[in-house]
Image (tube, rainbow, N blue to C red; front, side, top):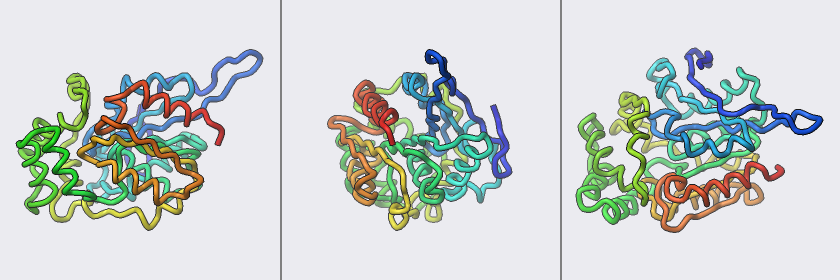
Length: 291
């Protein structure tokens, strides 16, 4: 389905009912709004893993502008401020009140943009393997890619995070996907996940452009204190893309009474691919916990 939001048509899909029969009443479930990673990917990377949560929440999957099945809009709208504003406007357009917003990796960064720009909007946040400052811990990233991906992955990481300011191009992106991305997780990902996804390399190239791309320039730490809702932060201690220190920094910067920080030993990027049952149990408990 598509809906017009801030001048573009955004694609979304829905899993599970909002209202379910429960004896003499229709019980209302919260909305769990899923913000995918990338950029340049789509919501399909969450499926079917997150479908198990549809008994406790109505799940809505959203493709960011310029991503997946959503329209591009103007290229100067491919930025965190616009993506964050789109989340709020999308909810307002569909009448979604008090969403629980979950974002992993880049999706978590968009969730932070949304929550800091619209602090009264979400009821809860779930941030998985994300960062609040671009380009954090470059040496740590290189070491972890070399440890889990070998010398070739380490060399790519060194070039990407430490050495070059040359433009990020399709050849480098393809090498990264082929050589470095298998090191993201400790359990190999289902190859059909990548085959199912609608990939949009142009938005990734825009985001990671050197030296002017936003990926290495944003810093949300001055605004994190604006967040007013309970926030669950999850990270894998073996994540080479967004090392656990990035999640620890976010947790430390949030108001202490709002944050729950969960570290997963032996896990890489996204946590869920490596320990789905453990990770989903934590997420489920957070969703169902009274605010």
